[in-house]
Image (cartoon, rainbow over all chains, first blue to last red; front, side, top):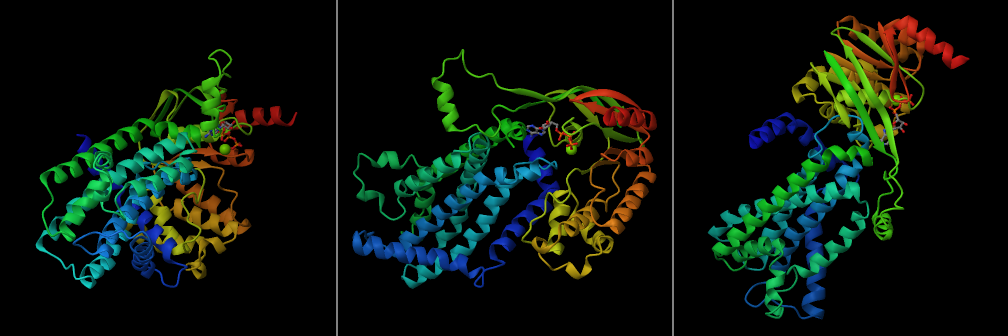
Length: 262
Length: 245
Ligand SMILES: Nc1ncnc2c1ncn2[C@@H]1O[C@H](COP(=O)(O)OP(=O)(O)OP(=O)(O)O)[C@@H](O)[C@H]1O
Ligand SMILES: [Mg+2]
């Protein structure tokens, strides 16, 4: 019943959704000369900078696999999350002028941001594969399972986007708070270091972080060439679906009150 | 066609916008008793009326009387705090035009974006594209970013997009005063032709003459309450007299 509602609603507003996503694209790239090339270059440059800092200065390394590929796999996943969740969070407040004048289902704003950044994410897979080949890591048959991790990442991010955008309507300080949380989160997620460099007693805490599992899933396949453990499969889907459901519930419960906080 | 039953709309002016962590902590440490009472404000209070198919209803009242709020509740933009609104038919809300414009995009791109925001389908916009451009008289500016438009040009484009539909219910909130004189006449003519086609219209304007010439019935709002409902000319004259004296 609920699902059927969602699909008919999505069908009705799919054109608007496409327009919003393409608007974001046009606005983002219209005035830059390199345009889309930035999307490809940006993760590569970040990777290069971080690789120089962490592998030369701090002597981080990942035994058995290329540190560059290790870094980039974590970066593209985490960058997707941080950019999409940030944009989603501000999307509702930013569209208040619209929400105050026309009836539009409000969930469409966080959703369009997650999709927009999602397309960017798919573009960053190009530099990722280039690095996989350049470092001699190569590809294997298990890559067909990668979309599973991407889907989980998307659902998790969308759920967080719903929660953050709803909360930030009532609590504008959220923008600052979340900025700090996100910085902390980056360091607590094993993006640039291997979880095994952390003391055994702390590892279980780091594993409470869903982002760790999505990234781990991708690394198991692309770097270590093996199918992730059943436990990883389960953690990914359960954490993302649970967060998405919480997000939908929070958003639906609060959306009629948004108008009072315009 | 439209039934408004006991609609009240409350805004919490006290918590609005300033709600932040700072206030939250301040309030937490204050004892329950001397917590400042949330300032309540009723923008609409127990409003009742009915609109039949094909009727053209005007709303009058001073600034802040609740006219726009009433229209937004009918258009579904806001849920009333209490009471209910029944609407049969598809609504074209022209409450504030151009709300969905993105200043960075060109006029052409904005026609599609704004059309989508208003709920048009892709096919519909493609069909009506020519008509929109024609009516707005902005053909040479189609590929110019709207950021570089004058405000009148933006308003023309917005008006042309919004009025391209044939809605069953048209909601118009003070939008006829856009553009230069030529365009004002053109937009009023367009509005009249929409009305002549049997559309139900809810119309807000501060121009009493306009209301008199277009509407059959008028709702007079004062401080969120219905002061009077009745035949257009009668109510308008009475309203006019209270305003000037
Ligand atoms: N989102 C909101 N939050 C708080 N108060 C609001 C909000 N929207 C409207 N109000 C208040 O409700 C009252 C009625 O506003 P409304 O816009 O309906 O007036 P109006 O009759 O359209 O006036 P005008 O003739 O100036 O257009 C105003 O006092 C306004 O401050
Ligand atoms: Mg108004």
